[in-house]
Amino acid sequence: MLLAIDTSAGTSVAVVDRDAGVLAEINEADTRRHAEVIGTMISTALREAGVAVADLSGVAVGMGPGPFTGLRVGIAAARAFAWGAGKPVVPVVSHDAVAFGATEPLLVVTDARRREVYWSAYSGTDEQGLPVRVSGPGLAPPDALGEVVPGYDGYRRFDAAEVSAASLGLVAELLYLHRRPFAGSEALYLRSPDVTLSSGPKRVS
Image (tube, rainbow, N blue to C red):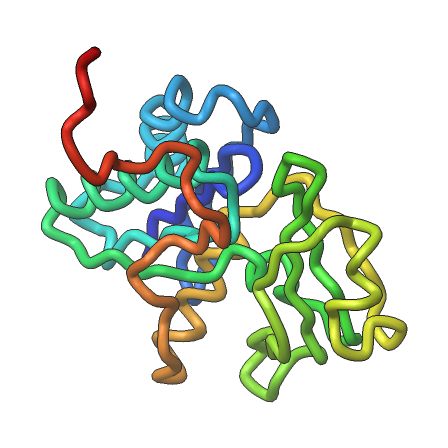
């Protein structure tokens, strides 16, 4: 049984079980309220699912792609909760949750802001029910997708405004069940941060 968290678009928190399915899911579409709502949403999801923290086997978290500010809230919340609960963190590519259940070639597109989008291309679903990502995640201007996505015309494009934590958690359950690798531990920002450290002391004039 997993607590699942994704803040790569809006904020989504769920409790899922491999056998029982989705026990609870809470969503907030506002992309500016991640830090404000995440704690309450975790508490609400656990309460609605009727699940104690001790009953969880881990915390699944969406690693993006997503904008820096929102994405880091969910990852930090997941890591802090897991550390406090003594549970492992299970990292999952957020776009895999959007593609979960799609049997046809699918191009998942999410808003990266600054007139750019994140994209990932999927050929469908494998025999274990997991999405098969064939390229991406990537970052591009919306009107350049046809140039940067291999075989662009062969995909149905899906622009996702939200990423379901329930789907993310179910992907994590299947990855574990079939001994597939999880995502890496580094967030998929795909863009350099706005602020960089100075290479030396500031000159005073």
